[in-house]
Image 1 (cartoon, protein in one colour):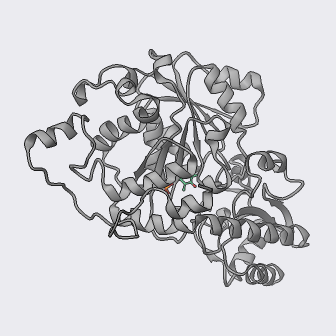
Image 2: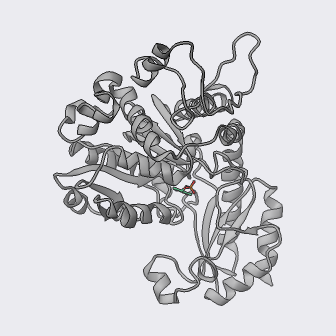
Image 3: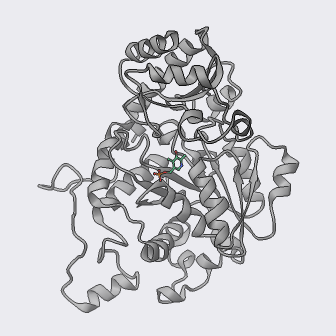
Length: 423
Ligand SMILES: *Cc1c(COP(=O)(O)O)cnc(C)c1O
């Protein structure tokens, strides 16, 4: 099946007389005839459901659709993108371990790694995604367990060189984890370029309608844990907290990572996605391919308009010819990148504030990547306590506006920006 077809068909095939839609199994628990039947589930000897904190049929069907879209072997939904990124790393790195991460990742993920996971005893080295080979090589340590990056960094819009980082990770016997939220599997499949694990904030384009917060982890099934037995004891030696199971032996390359994340991390942390939310996420997934195409077409036209406007100092959109990441974006995302653009309003902080005041269609929101055009001026909202100099040091200039182009008629979006710029 092609991507467009998978959006509609993958994850659930109704049998004779079954509901056409993925059913919402709104049940915490599942009934069994005998204790032995249930015991087999607990021992991971048989497949089935017993308690929705671990697994639920609705969430599993939606996860299977995302796995199919990414070309992976197994997937799990989580309550949010933050939970997905946390689990993806914590599943293989623990106190005393080390992770190499791109320095331009989403602020929430950066904080999770740099503050919260450091408190748990995991060390992180952040590298510029465009660093030299020597710098990248120097970031690895004997206790490094993973490399982490974002396909298109939110909000810096830097395109990650997936292939290069995958080669470096594999040379050190560790997997590459890629947060593919902004590109979605419609525009980029990181597994095709050597990534081993993909994560998503499904809150963004996948849901696409500002309706549900959620996350997802997908395993490519390509990473050979047993070949690096000493590095990943959590997968390659018996789990005493789970009946002595050795995940990599029992579930192989294709199933070990997600089974362990479910059996251990979901069991203990409970960051589960509700069946009702998974149902809504699935509605978003069904139209993901057509929406992404429209987001990219609209964003390209808006980027061109902004580039030609004499009220705009600069435009950053990786799909725009001349952008620093244009060639790399063409390689990894030949069909388009995403709908998010950043640009500078001529006149700095004050002019940007004035521009924001006069917008009518574009809504001011911290959110990005959904059907509605939304916009944020960090210097006067999320980052308002910082001076112009402090902002620059953090990579956000005082004139920077982040615009998430929606799927409205592009003429209306451009007309709104134009009148607010000219005010
Ligand atoms: C939003 C976002 C997250 C966090 O996801 P939540 O669903 O908000 O928890 C992680 N990574 C990226 C790239 C994001 O844009």
